[in-house]
Image (cartoon, rainbow, N blue to C red; front, side, top):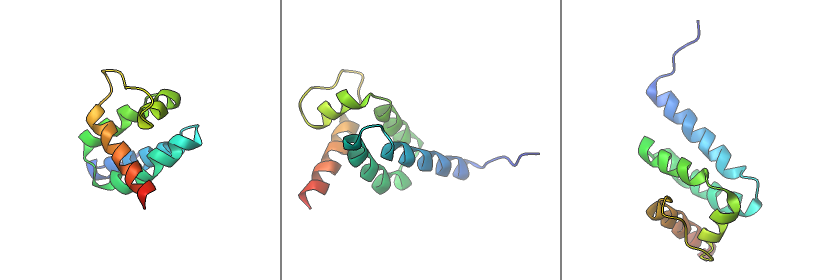
Length: 96
């Protein structure tokens, strides 16, 4: 009989999977933006914030990169506040 995961184990596994996905996007540019963000923040995220990260990561890399770089405005369905948080995190890393 398989052991049932507890809620803590479930969210820990979800965080681990999201960190992996953030580093293995398909384009190196987005790996270098989302990977460090995920490494720095997923451990402190609750399920709702993980949902927001997952939704952002479900977007295709080419348009996502244009939004992060300020070359295009994201569509209305994109969580702009969360995207701005990712952009600010990336900008802070570049400034170091």
